[in-house]
Length: 509
Image (cartoon, rainbow, N blue to C red; front, top):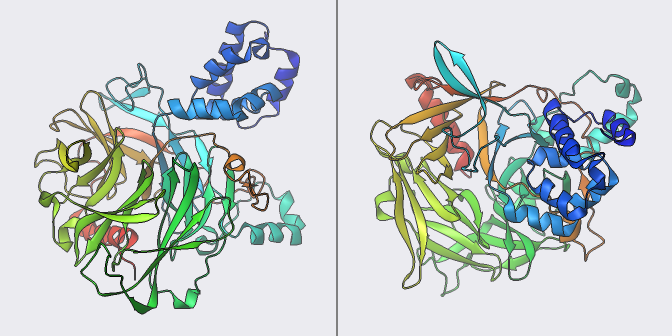
């Protein structure tokens, strides 16, 4: 039986679902009269086996569990065991979209998101069974310009009594763009120019606002490139910011890119916990955005376009604060009309390039060779029946299967080993485009990252506008198995969709 104090405590928690309650009840019954009577080392081992949402719930059960989960040692143990998961977000231009859906299916034997082994719900439709997953783990990122919303609530106290009313805020004033993920943290930017503004941990709800850069906005030209990364050697988190001015300067003679003598591109870097930005030499020069910023092993990678062809990947080393060019496989050199369907990702701890611009789709991984540095190796190839389009690699399974996200149709594609058989999981819920990213949930506290600087204010989503209801946030989202042709675009719609993703992912001006 549960001790009376814990029972009363849990009645106050509105976030707990029936599944979470039953899971905790089961653990308590196994442990005896009370879960909190167990030794800490046993509690830690139990907590490490739970999904993210249940651990978050356990923090609200009692002070002992909250302290255990917040302990630095538990945070490190949890992150060392954590697996990359899928974050899904709507891209509805009329909504704020601060809700992130974390895909954490209950998987047996730990194979990952493998439909052959997944213990998720299966339903019947037209005499066929299909996978059905409700995405009930919702995380939140902060509102941009939250002060104006809070001030409005203060100036209009009558709105506090209208609890059922959802706020209809303007996305241009309050929406964030998610740039990339690094060790459980997200880099958030202002959407129109992609200027980095905040760093957030969506699991803990903590976020910090970055200091303004010393560049005059009127001197800027085009969209900014940016990203968050971590330096393992110095144990520091940093944000890189690459921007262009309306004036040009002569490049140094030792610049890695000799195709331009002059440049209007500059870069600055910020270390979390400090209050300033400092200049970095040799910023990349391109008329297009750095595509699909991806963090891996102390560096940020992005597709680098020159002369309307992506011959290279640009990387930024966060320890040495230097840029470097990596050449793509020659098989992936395409014209402008084709390379828009290329993306970057991480599969099994290695940088990967997904090329869906040909009649067959190919996945390449960057291998570290002890004898001659790095080289590309083909990991996966799919035949000509695979639909043309822009894909993002999500996970490569031990069985040889591959999970991808298809941007144009907002759905997941599960390809069995060899690339000959496909299964489709469509996103069912709000009518919208969607974006996905691979994210490793973490309980890393921003307080520990910026501990040496007391001037950095740590804010929390749950205490600042977290309780406010925004339009569309209460809608449920599902992943459902679909027939092969479900969700595909008509030819008349395809050019519109392709143009949208070109502008969203690539064009600077």
